[in-house]
Image (cartoon, rainbow, N blue to C red):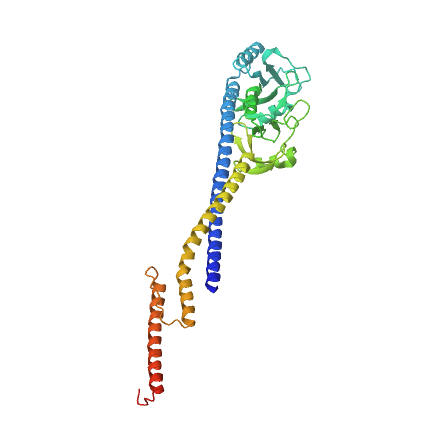
Length: 381
């Protein structure tokens, strides 16, 4: 009975140890799979946002070079017809450029700030027009590079537009600003092509105005504009604060998503890529289920093999115990079988046989002595 209890305890402890080992290995494998999935998701999203940022940079670099050419080649001190011919010719080069204009300081200017404005299409501003108050003019005058305005919605077409402008210099002196208005239809179409289910990319200006977004309540329109400070309680602002740094956000559609941003160098705009984690969570769930099923199956198989391996180890001991009980019942002529498969059982069996042989010898001597005495042979030793 005691040996059966010992066998049961050994089996239980061995099975418990195996259970924890298998559980640990399955958990470790699950964590490794999870880390690989998350790493792949983050890497894929980073490549995604960098791709769109690169495409925007390529598209806008052409326009930056174009306005630089407009400013460099702008005529100065010539007739009005030369100015209008110049801007009309350049405006015709790009279909997405709605207007090109040259604003130059002239002594005979009819406007309060002394600046004449020549715009493609022959538009002539009213006599009280002050172009120097415009943000695109003052912005270009204050920088050596190209100034990119905040996006706005054209009242006539309803399209998103921006203004690019650059200062005009003659003999090292500032004489005016060249500018152009361009539609962002191509960029908007490019960004809207990223809307796939819960995944999307959107664009923000350098000052944080959201230009495009799958949610009409957030996207720029003629009626309103939304900034990254306002949308989703400022969650987008945190995404834009650090470039190529992944953040988890609770999306406007609901659900936890991964977001990352990259800056388009040519304009200073931010491209934000948002990717759903539903697929990741599904893979994690499947991984946990598979790991659990695998752990249970391996545990059952190992326990079964351990039971088969451990129980035979106690069979010789149980046989020895049963035979020892025969000796206690007076059966002294029994010889223990030697188990060659176990050195320990073999040594114990040999020791017990030697003990039994010695015991039988002592009992034989005692029997001979008692017999001699009973026969009144008092000289027996």
